[in-house]
Amino acid sequence: MSASISPFASLRHRNFRLFFAGQTTSLIGTWMQSIAQGWLVLQLTNSAFAVGLVAAAGALPVLLFSLPAGVIVDRANKHRIIVVCQSLMLVDALVLTILVATHRVLPWHVGVLAAIVGCLSAKERVALDSIMAKLAREAEICYATVAMITDYDCWHPDHASVTLEEIVSNLNKNAENAQAVVRNAVRSMPAARGCKCGSALAHAILTDSAAIPASARKRLATIAGKYLSPGSR
Image (cartoon, rainbow, N blue to C red):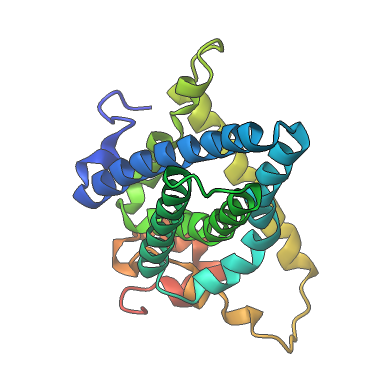
């Protein structure tokens, strides 16, 4: 790897800096609320089971709704989805704050509010993953990913630090696995299909076709050539 390339090159882009700062602030607030909710329910009920129910109410929607949310996000304005979801999460936190401040909060209030955040997170996370490709040039998208996942070191202070080389190595292995899955899937696809899956890539490629290097277009020509030519989208 060239020593002249910074692993945080994507931070040169204003939009990505805003995204990174906003996500950092949002995630700090989200985890503070999550921990506070569990502690609040424990104080209200003195029941570990109730604490587990609230945690499940927040986590299950992400598990159940992330896949269908991906279908919706692919066909919608991702920026608008993120803004709406973040705004509703803010309202959720304000409602909980008011209930606690007025001493009217009940355990079921906390559970319902946790479930609402879980449902919003299921949709927002998919949109966040998709929109990252628009925030940095194609050549630097891997470094955008690195910049977003280095908080691992912060949450595991007793573990060995994760190096850039380890991250890049894992990303390369994941890419190789994904390519193998695609190759196997293509071989098993019938020549004639009655579904619209043949045009799925028309909405799946986020990067402006003019910004995709000619070498990359050549490698992908077999499976996505008609969507990658400059001016095609």
